[in-house]
Image 1: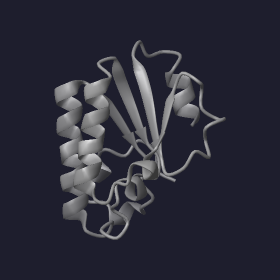
Image 2 (image 1 turned 60 degrees about the vertical axis):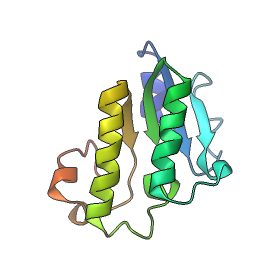
Image 3 (image 1 turned 180 degrees about the vertical axis):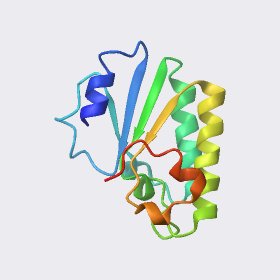
Image 4 (image 1 turned 90 degrees about the horizontal axis):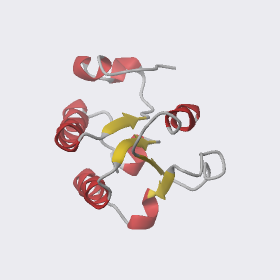
Length: 127
């Protein structure tokens, strides 16, 4: 939340924050668009990627997207231990990010030993 609120002051485009609830609505700067993902009945990771693509297609000024509780909102909680599937989904997100110039910031609740070496290199903050 702190990072998103700080970023809104420096970006020239829009920021979207995807979450599993509206709990953070009053903590986010009012210029950040909060999307409660469960409202959209997404049932798997492929639908989640399609949902992200739809958001991007509707906002050509979109600069950053934050994914809080990524495993939950991307419907990947059960497959979190499957590093190949997680790598594949994050790989698709990286391709979308490159193509449309939108930065993605993911919050993933996994221990460092549960991440592949490729994903470990992308970690900004570890708790």
